[in-house]
Figure 1 (cartoon, rainbow, N blue to C red):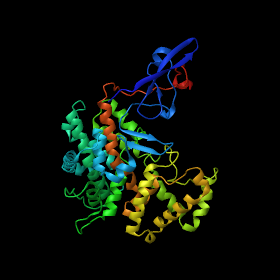
Figure 2: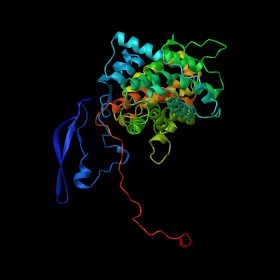
Figure 3: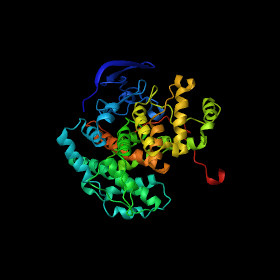
Length: 433
């Protein structure tokens, strides 16, 4: 990794002391003030709850400019990647920071395909969960347990073991996720099929049963592959930061990815597309859309229009435009008119995009709106939505973890605090309290 360059200095005056802080510049994006020596020189820390104004690392993987709607991996726009690449090609890009040539891609696809089976004893782990357990609970447990079965890829100081662990996680996550679904619905597990593509194999393991053949349509396979690409990495979000922080302690990669899955499970992070379906169910009927749009405009009304606007993308979500075409294709395939909820979603999209209030505020449908609709159309229950997000994001987590481990300047993470509790006080005997 190349070091960010010093382009200027910032002067900070605290009382009678003045310190010079380096200003660093990356290849794109805002400059940053390097405050690493601030405490040593001033006996003070910076205060930034939730780290929203703090760069916790430098990275070459993903670049986002939310003001203008840009998302790039390794310099390639998300639009170009979804139009021209497969998910496994994007996985290679994130792991190696360059697109593969044909020979490299073929070898990588073969490697991933040959790692899709999971250790047979892990099958027994599923039966330890209740049948009504959330699939994310199973995902966290099984991924964390991988460190007990794959001892030959837990040495984080060995580059080859790091790469093998990366391949295993990318390859086995579809199997683990599909089996989590199968377990919760009481169906037999379906083993991977090495003759299928990554997305098709996942759909096959999820929806096929021994009694009859399941063959997903090309439109649905394409949509799943695009969804995986669109969710592969998204810079230093909550789950990625968790993976990096866990990894900074020297924890094995399987434990680190399990920590990322746990963070993603939070409804504020990975539950947005599920919230879209819940909102549509709340609206209930197309005739109720005007009423709920008015409620969304009322600041005193708790109702919010889920799946519109984005915390990072202040203009538009570049992933949404890509996924809208896939959503249209899938809905045409399955027949949205036959599903009142999907029909309602399309009508809500149409009316909201014509409403001056939402257009002026750039509250356009985001990736969660369209992915939720696609998942519903394919047949996934809402409990699986976050699992699908985790499946796709695994490559981003492992690439970020790998980049951090390979950074010679990496140290264990240790955020500071502004203490606001009581100062030292005498300990009272229990009878005097």
